[in-house]
Image (cartoon, rainbow, N blue to C red; front, side, top):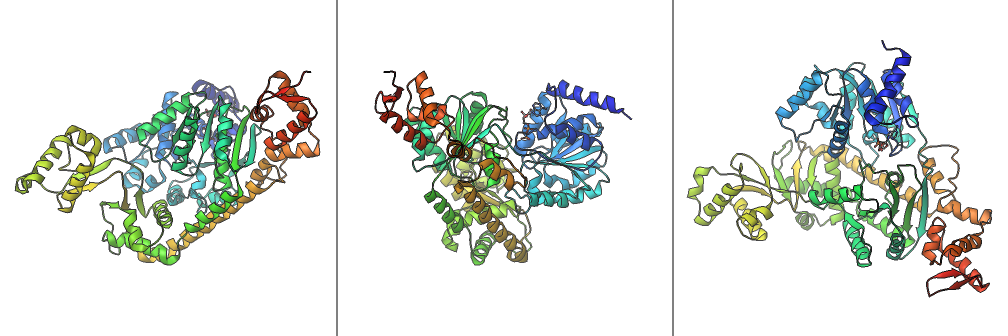
Length: 635
Ligand code: ADP
C-alpha cells in the first residue's frame, strides 16, 4: 500500500514527467483522487477544462488498463495519437482494425503494457471483446462525453446504455463519467443510466472570465464580418449554419482582400479537410468558416474569437462552440450576429422539418419496401439511396426526409451515409463467366479486373476518378457503365457521391410505429424547446449573457460578467461610462474609423460610438480626415 505522501509525489511527478505541467488545474486533482480511491465519480468541466488528464493520469498510476468509452472514432484516434506522442501506451479498438491487429492490442492489455484502451460503446457487447476482457485487468472505466447517454440531448447515442449492463458484469469496477454539457436534468440521467453508486460529483463553474460575449443585432452581416476581419491578425472560427453559407461567405471575404480565410464542412473530401484543419491549427491568424462539423476534439489554445454568423440551435451548442476560444486563458471574443427576421425564418425551418406520424411512417415504409426488406429481415447489403426518389414517392419535403433519415441513423436502425465517400464495387459473376458475356461488357469487366484488385472476392473501395484516368475515359461515362452492369446483375456498385443506406436492425414494424415514433416526436419537441430557450437568450437585453448561460446550466447566485454586450450597455447607462472621453483618447494616438475605434474600445456598440462622434464633431473636438476617418482636433 502506497503512503499518502508517496501518492502525492507520484501524482505530481507523473504530471511533470509525461505532460510537463507543474500543477493541476481547478478540480483535476480532486477528480483524480476520487477515482484512484475507487469511488464512482462524475466530473463536469467546461470545454477546454482539461477532462482528458482526469482519467489519463490515474490510468498511469493504477494497475491494469483503463477502459475509455468514447463516442467518435476521430476523437479516439486523436487521443491515442496524443498519448503515444508523450510516451504513454494507449490503443483504440475499431472495426477498421483486422483481427490480427486487435489480437496484438488485446495481448498488450493482458500483459498490462497498454494503460488506456479506447472503445466505442457498441463494442461493449462484442463477444470477442468480452471474451478477451476476462483476461484483462481493468483499472476503471472512463466514460467520455457522458451526456450522450441522455435521451433528450442532441448527441443521444443509444449504445451508451450498454455501459450499465457491462458494468454490472464487472464487479466493483469504478466509473468516471466526464462531460462538458450538462443541465441538471441530464446530470441526473447520467447518474441513473450509468448506475453510478453514491458518486462524488465535481461541478466546476462553467464561467469563463476571459470570454467577452458580444451580441450584434444587425442586418448586413457580410459587411460586419468584413469589418471585423479587416483589422484582425489572430486565429478564429466563424460558425455558419449551412455548407453553402460557409462557401459563399469565404468567397465574399476573399473577393474583398481577406486572404487568411477558408471554409470547412462535412462535404469536403477527407484529404482536403485535413489540409484545411492543419493549416488552421498551425497558423497564428487563419480563420475557418465552418458548419458545426468543425471543432469536436480540436485542441488549439490561441483561438482569439468565435463569430456566430447566426444563432446556434441551442444554448448547449452555442456554449460548446464559443468555449473553443481562449483556452490559453487570454482575453477572447464571442460575437453573435442576429436579426429578428432570421429568428422567424429559423422558426419556420424547424417546423418544416417535422413530419406528421403518417409522413414518418411513409418514409420508413418506403425504405423497407423499395429495398425489399420484409418483417424481421436484416439484409447484409449496402443500398444506394436516391433521396429524390423517396420524395417523388412519399411527396414529403426533403427537409422532413433528411430529418427522419438522421433520426434512424442516430438510433442505429440504419447507417445513413450522406457524405461524399469512396465508391465501392464487387463482381457478382465468376471469372469463368466473363467470356460468356457480350463483348462490350466482357471487355469492360476485364479492364476492371486489371485495374482494381480483389473485386472477385469482396467489396472494394475505389475512386471512379482515378480509375477513369487509368483507362483514359470520362468519370460520368464510367458511372453510367457501372449502373448498366449492375442492372444486368454482373456487379454491385455503390456511388460514393450519392447517399447510401445499410440496415443495422431487423425490421420491426411495431417498434417503428410505437417506440420509435414516440421517441422521434419527443426529440422534435425537445429541439423546439431548446430553440425557444436560445431565442430568449439572444433577444434578451436585460440580463448579463454569461449569467443567462450559467443559470441555464443550473448554477445559482451567478454574478454578472461585467464585460458582455449587455453589461457594457448597462455600464454606459448606469455608471455613465464616458465614451466621448475614451474616443478622444483613442484618436489622440492616431486617426481611426468607427470600426477601429469600436475594436480599440473592446467592441463597444457602434451606434453608441457614432452618437458620441457626432457630438464630438459638433463641438469641434474631433474632425474628419475623409468620409470615414476621424482625427483628434488639435487646433
Ligand atoms: P477538454 O477535454 O476538457 O475539452 P482537454 O483535456 O482537451 O480539455 O484539455 C484542454 C487543454 O488543456 C489541453 O491542451 C491540455 O493539454 C491542457 N491542460 C490540461 N490540464 C492541464 C494542466 N494541469 N496544466 C496545463 N495545461 C493543461
